[in-house]
Image (cartoon, rainbow, N blue to C red; front, side, top):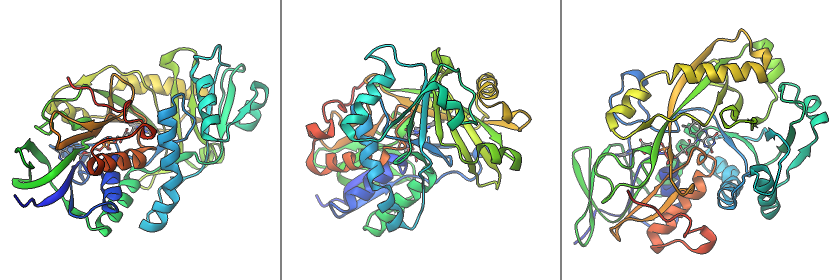
Length: 395
Ligand SMILES: Cc1cc2nc3c(=O)[nH]c(=O)nc-3n(C[C@H](O)[C@H](O)[C@H](O)COP(=O)(O)OP(=O)(O)OC[C@H]3O[C@@H](n4cnc5c(N)ncnc54)[C@H](O)[C@@H]3O)c2cc1C
């Protein structure tokens, strides 16, 4: 049977839009299906996404070789994507990790230093005595060491990156269908996708629907992931604070306890015209299994006690933030039991899945999208693309 498209990608998010861009230089007859960001978050009764924000940390410094490699490969293409799309999204302000000096080889920092040598990343180790002098905005424990990646690190604007990827995909001939897919079915010789009340057929489909991959009937069997709530705190920054925090790099503080780990984005201007310094942690346990519950979460302001917890840490680390208005916002992160993203075929040889950002995939989304595109064209991923590690696990 003649199909409408050779390939359909479901999900116009960070991974899906990147997959569409890469695929557009490998094949013809491609559709990218996904809605745009809702204009009124609190009144929206539909899908959301994990990239509706202005800043995500980017770095190659990572305790895991696969994740470090994905980030390094994606980072290597940022400037080209910016130049070709005319959309700028990368602020190369550097990224500082700080924490207690590693105790052994199993420590995250020890492993990240090993990975950085493999990747050829330039990481400067900063002694505790120097840390406060160099990064005066931050009041960390006097025993903490710093690990600074000055180049190929900083932050990206996730909305702008998705815009750039989508623009280049369309320029490459991809048909953009602004709709929600409500079913994906292997029909034997092809796949049938229903979206926006219409039906589309394709030889192969890639489901890249982020934390929403298990909702609707997009996959033959659900993937084993946990969709967890994440709350972020925003400090509204004025001129006085800009003088203190304006030049800071993206910062990750590994406290002595896991609940004290925190990531901080430097002041960034938001669409409301205000400038915010943002911070978040990684320990919220609230998880979602129903679309309605994720919707309710995204319409909220996040978790008030998490916001207060983040605020308390923020004021300890950056006392100069005292007095700045604090707000919070909700997001979700999609965690896999393997710790790796999923990029592989489902029970159907025609339906593949690309998801499982594990709270860290924005920076690497261009490379993960490339892997999704290779999967559709070649049917599998090789060793240098970490194909085995990325094998999806199904519930
Ligand atoms: C608070 C927070 C902070 C983070 N900070 C960082 C960071 O500093 N650095 C970093 O690298 N990463 C960070 N991340 C992680 C990063 O944002 C995610 O890993 C990334 O967005 C995942 O990309 P994705 O394409 O899988 O999902 P998304 O970006 O969520 O995209 C999924 C897309 O699928 C679409 N979709 C869903 N269902 C359907 C359907 N049925 N039909 C059509 N379309 C559908 C959605 O509309 C959405 O556009 C953070 C995440 C959160 C929540």
